[in-house]
Image (cartoon, rainbow, N blue to C red; front, top):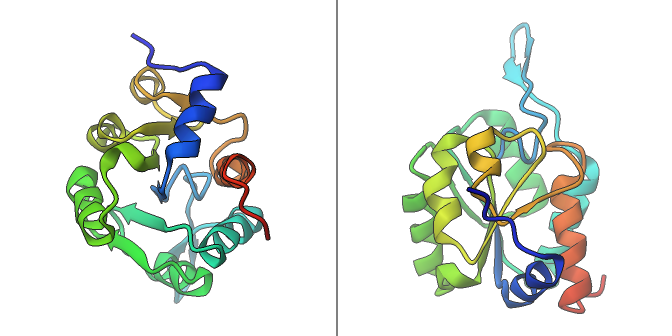
Length: 172
């Protein structure tokens, strides 16, 4: 059963969004890793997504990361982008989201969460706006409110950020 919403309902929910939470692999990346001898596994992050995150943060709009992983490349990406709100190393995304929701006093109904994998589903089902990408598992795509045009790691996050900026009149 699909939970996809209309474009007008998507805009209505985005206008009510007070925090954007992001999964990492498959959302901020294309879900591929590669190995560098002496450094270990790493992945590519999209510069446009990163700049969009910085724009929202600069405007005072909370952006957070919830990830089951806690690799060094992710920690460095969080540091470089200036992301203050994150929970790493916990595959229970709903608990991670609750931690950030309580810390920032933002109810679930005002949170947009982007996820793509089965362990993202409890958190995706709990938020006011659930978003995924074309490469997500079918079970996730069948239960989220919105699927981006762009793929994970290739501008999907920036697509949502630009929509938030437009609908909430957030300027650079």
